[in-house]
Length: 111
Length: 112
Image (cartoon, rainbow over all chains, first blue to last red; front, side, top):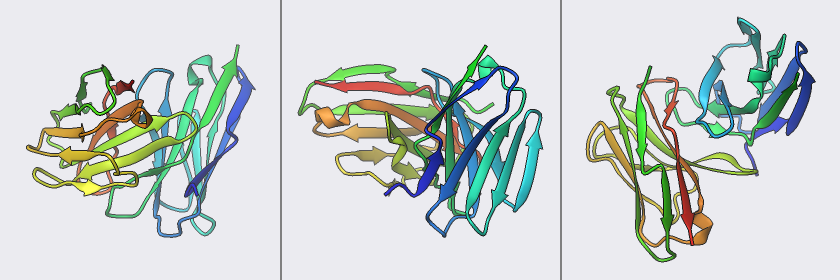
């Protein structure tokens, strides 16, 4: 059973719209969440990480974390065609730096 | 930015043959990782290392060995390749603590 679940599997948003991606860990022994972005044919690159309850914003990207429910979400406002990619969520336990990835959400931003 | 390179970038192997995938990083990171990526499975951890001379089993180690002869190099070895090992393999490195992982460009392996 996948320990990190992501939804939806795929998502289409219009250019300029808001994309919302979800991720939940079924393993309660995790402390940190990571969001990676992978463009087609490329390697994953870290987008954002969140370790504490609450919200973190970097430009057009906002990440939320609810540690009680082990749920994180990534929101992309003013989505651009260049945001079209596979978005991977990962969870880790503090001090181990060993990531467990979900299957990812494919985001397509239509011009 | 962290520099992680992999070789070869593409490899075609025969069933039962031995395959070695190599990874090199120039950032003096202690931690290195090998993942495979298959459609519908995301990234799955095969082996990882906390430093030269150490290797640890990840979530799917069966059929794979790893070697970390130096801080910079981490190899993934398939002693008897099978078609089920056809995949894209990524190497990554990270500093100590809960640090960002930096990924290499990937190796596409096809086992016929």
